[in-house]
Image (cartoon, rainbow, N blue to C red; front, side, top):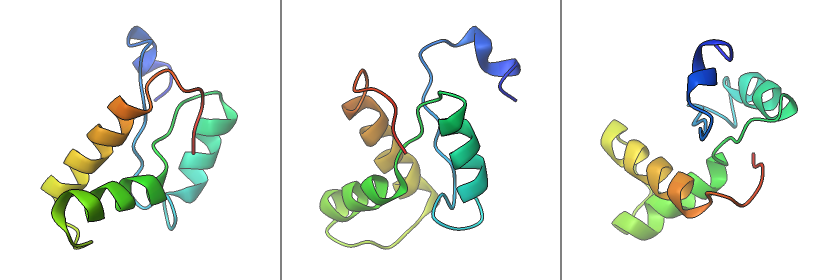
Length: 78
């Protein structure tokens, strides 16, 4: 996976379930020096953006994109 994405040097990873089943993947990406959208921050953005914390694929995608754009250039995250 990491070999495939080398063509996009300005990348940010969003891992579904980064506080659950996706946690090992998120941790490996961070250990490899990749930027990963923090799961808690994405949830917080979803709450403030919509007024509730109900999850849908569309809301998740939007909140993760907002976090990724808002944290660009701020180092590595998890």
